[in-house]
Length: 163
Image (cartoon, rainbow, N blue to C red; front, top):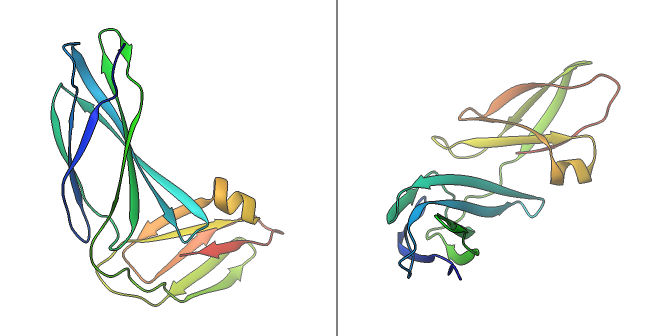
C-alpha cells in the first residue's frame, strides 16, 4: 500500500506559504502534484496546481492574500502508481484587505469599463458571467495591477461583475 505524502508547513506570512513534502516509505517517488485551494469572496473557489519533480521537496507559494484560509492537498507519483491524497490547512497572517468598491459601465454593446478603489501594488482579479452559477463555476476573468480594465462581452446579455 502506498501511503499519502506528509505535508509540513514550514512557515507562512501575509503573502506566502512554505511547506515540505516527503514520503514515509521506501517506494521510489518521481514527484508530487499539489493543489492549493482558497475561496474568493464566498462565491468562487480558486486553485493553483504545482507539479513538482523529485523525491523530497520544499516549496514556497507566493502572491497570496493576507488572513485567508488555504487548503493544500498533495499526492505522490511513485513507481507503483499514485498515492492517496493528504491535506493541510493554513491561514495566512496579517489583515485581509478590504473589498474593493467596483463600478461597471457599458461603453458600447460589447465592451464594459470596470473601475474600483483599493490598495496599490497588488494584483486584482476581475470575474464576470451571465449568471451566479456561471460566476461560481466558470467565469470569464482577467487580472491587472491597475484600478480599471475594459472587458469584452457578448452583445444582448446581462453580466455580473466581481473584483
